[in-house]
Image (cartoon, rainbow, N blue to C red; front, side, top):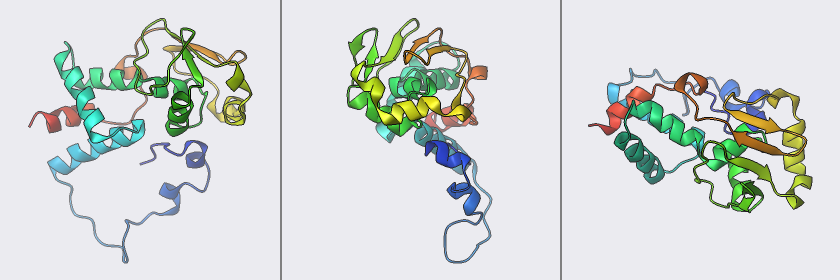
Length: 192
C-alpha cells in the first residue's frame, strides 16, 4: 500500500509499490492467509511508518489515547495528527514527514512566534505555525510550496502560502483524516 513516505516520488513511475508487484524473495511464492494477529500488526506498522514513529513513541501515544474519554482509535489518530512535524507536512512546508521532521529539528519552524525544535510537540487549537524569516529562502521549502499537485490543505488547517504561515483551526475528526487504516484493529492489538 502506498503510504506516501517518499513525498512526490510516490506519485511518479519510480514508486517501488508500482514497480514491484511480487513479494520480496527469489521466486514468487504463494502467500498464506494472514491471521487476525497479522492483520492487527500490519495496521499498527502502517500507522507507525506513516507518521515516522518508533515502537516506544507509538505505545506512549496509545496509552495517552486510552486514558482519554471517547473512542480510543479515533483519539489516537487525532493525537498523531497534532504532532508538529505532521502539521508542517500537512501545511505543505515540506514534501514528506521526514523532511518536515528535519525542518522542525533544525529550528526552521516557529509556533506562536517561538522557535520549537521538537517534532513531537503537540499543536493545539489556535496555534500559529510559520517558517522562520531566514528560512523562507530555503530551496526545499520553496519547491514544496510551488508544487501544484500538493495545493490545498486539510479543512482543519488554514494556510497562507505567501507568508509561509498556517493555523490549526480545530482538532480533526476521524472522517477528515484521510489515512486508509482500521484503527480498531490497533486497539484490539494493544488490548490483549
